[in-house]
Length: 378
Ligand SMILES: [Zn+2]
Image (cartoon, rainbow, N blue to C red; front, side):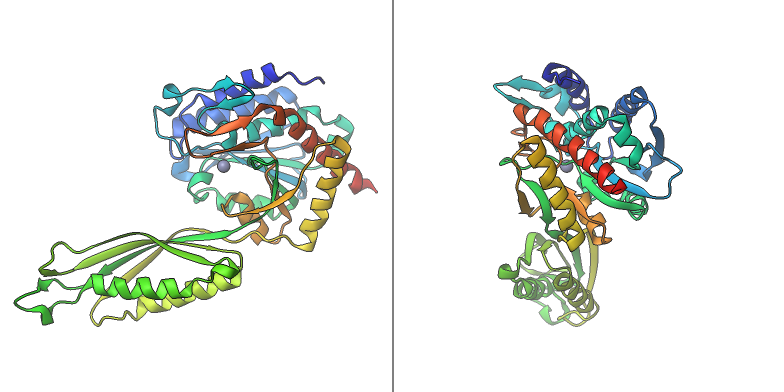
């Protein structure tokens, strides 16, 4: 099958020119219908729609739906981070070797590359593999409504490949930092700061203690960072502050180090610094760190062989951001990421897709499937 860039772009544009930010369910539905159609055309694929609560629909597509074992699970997300109106404002356009548009590389081209790689896979090889493709509607908010489903599927899988974009320098992703986000809401007691300061319990002072403590828990060398990105509190200089809040972002390589921090701040919330003050702590997002295991390294070797066979130069990167690979890796399932074409500047209007990377990355993925299929029978 010869690759036509024009045909690829003709298939990509309808996926980009849809407002499908997380929770824009109509848009997600459009993407799901377009993607399901591509698998229907291929024949031999069983398509299951999965309800993901308020996030809308997800797709689970398999070639051996009754097989309890999955050899390779591919994951991609259908949502973007962009508000309604973005697709009309700046639809996909192609210029000097790059395509631009909302979600063009994060990750509509990743979804499409999976389709192309499977189309190109010889039927013999396909029949040897139990393949599953999951497309979720809410990755950009941490897959809150789809992670339980993805975990259930991943537990049946030997390997997980996530088709987020390859890095700008072509790198695939073998490790990702973990992340957690907390909201701290502090309630104190208001009082006139001039007349009866002793009656007040300052939520702002309590928050100040928290900020100093949180800062002392970071370990930049080990890659553990804690950032109080937003704080709020108080209503006037002459009023003891009744309430204060903060949004905290934690990033880490070491899951144990993170758990120690989590335990410490949960404990502290039960025993605030200031008497009579209450602290409500909510963890609003969480992804464990993805750190390669020996099994992951075996998979990396196989991918390197595929890259060598296809003459596609690759290398491995550890990156800061999280993806669905973090969750599957935390289950102990070898997981790698970055199997989409090369792109960068995600979540901005500078987002781009590098056109000359599309075809090589499709070949790479097809070859990975073939090697998996044939290593199995050895
Ligand atoms: Zn993404």
